[in-house]
Amino acid sequence: MNIAFIGAGKVGGALADQVQRAGHLVTLAARDPGSESVAALLALNPAIGVASPAEAVTAAEVVFVATPAMAAEAAVRALGDALNGKVIVDCTNPVGPGLSHALDSRTSSSAVLQAAAPGAAVVKAFTIYGVEVLRDHRFGGQRPAMMFCGDDAAAKAKVADLIEALGWQPFDVGGLAQAVHLEHMTLLWIRLVRVNGHSPDLAWAALTR
Ligand SMILES: NC(=O)c1ccc[n+]([C@@H]2O[C@H](COP(=O)([O-])OP(=O)(O)OC[C@H]3O[C@@H](n4cnc5c(N)ncnc54)[C@H](OP(=O)(O)O)[C@@H]3O)[C@@H](O)[C@H]2O)c1
Image 1 (tube, rainbow, N blue to C red):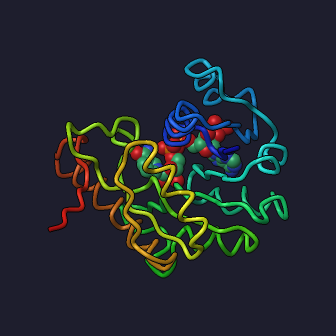
Image 2: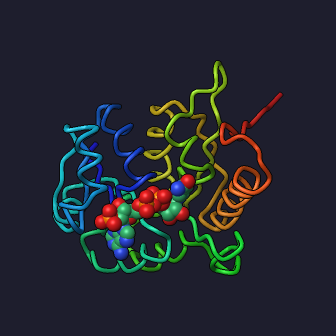
């Protein structure tokens, strides 16, 4: 698939590298092609391309959004109709002061993005961990769960395939209304690791019997 990334920092950069190595055509939708984050990623993986946001998104089937949550809405709105028909993978987390939910749990950053790009199908995925686990999710024989949600079944199937190809256990938790719960899972992970002293090698597993 042709996949664009808006935001290529810690999370976007790690995911762009993994997705490219899984065999996809990856292009950074770079607001500044000369930025430090773009340069660092291209040094790590020269097979990743760079284009303007409009060019990268127009050519893409799937668009990852991995900017700070509060910057994502404007970045998506600026793309206008270029996002029509695309799958948006929302990797953002609205983290507020004191590890609160920055939208007061009334809505999710995914719902905000869906409203900003009504012609696209938003799927929330690659969020419920800190970057340590997103960078390296090998846990011996066990696949950590990657929970995701969205309202469009075809879009979710594409994202589930990507999740599986990268080595996670895809776990569909339902419609986009569940995004706020995934955002709280991330806040819980951050609190457990950054405040309560748990190891960052902490992943969620979905056990069934
Ligand atoms: N860090 C984590 O552990 C973690 C885990 C899960 C999810 N997340 C979520 O993932 C998202 C990215 O986090 P991160 O840690 O990767 O942040 P980061 O390292 O600071 O990277 C942010 C990226 O977004 C770009 N960006 C910033 N403002 C932008 C704007 N207005 N328009 C377009 N691009 C913009 C930056 O581009 P420049 O290089 O040009 O500044 C950079 O590439 C956040 O929503 C965060 O909550 C983070």
